[in-house]
Length: 303
Length: 86
Image 1 (tube, chains in turn blue, brown):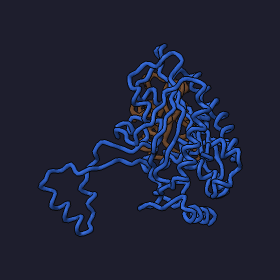
Image 2 (cartoon, one colour):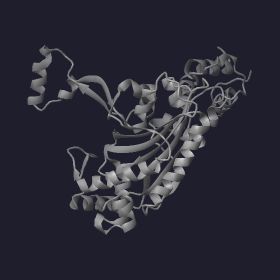
Image 3 (cartoon, chains in turn cyan, brown):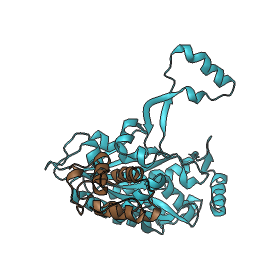
């Protein structure tokens, strides 16, 4: 973490906007911080209201088989989080109690319970369409979910629990490509409208290991994913939104087809809500009341 | 020992998750157009490393390296793998 990020982190904590949680990379957010998040949610939602879409606040939890089907386990094994529970019989309970009381490692006695934490909001949608045929023009979703990625850091731009609002398209190829293009442009306009300086760059997802290098190269060569980067907790730009065309990746994984019988294509555009909020505090200062009136109006912060 | 082209096709057949038989692909057939996904190409890369006892350097970790049987053979040759032309 750079000293600029460290300074900004401390300023956010001193201002009461963030409170460090019980583990690295876990932050509690003040209601003022969350008011900005709510403002962004409404602001981007209104921009997407020109066409009918299914709106869903998704659960944080997934069946862990979804992570395997979508290849997320292979691509990002270091980022995923699966849940465990005590599934043994009562005869093992004394040992568990023993370990807890002696400060030993009780987590070893837990077993995966079949649930995982979602790493992106749109990951909840594809399994819900498994085996389905989508209408001729495709399906459009606006979804949000609290997400987890295991990348412990003190940098508030890398919270381990964060939320994502996404506009997701599942349907024919042309529609999926057009959706990403539309939202890359629209997302840029929306965020620039809040006074943020942005750049659109090819994504550089942190795929795991040497295999990951091939995945990143492939993603870039296919021009599959773009990120909107801005200053978040320092001048060094980080992604606050991204537009991703998945081709038939999820359509194949979950057996989703178009009305013509082809495998469905998909694309999504995601707004990283905490990162956008942090970028706004970084850009306009820690006192929301002193933000430009147009930004305050756009985010409905005056009520 | 089978020739390199056959070995490459066998690796593709076992790891490429292709909707077509890899054994029937021609040397210059585009593997991506024949259904090789990015994720499957990773499995193919790792299986080729095992089969030919080589390690692809970062500079070869590109989409093009795995675009056809011929391209794979060329990459393996550049790494000094025992690849005879057939």
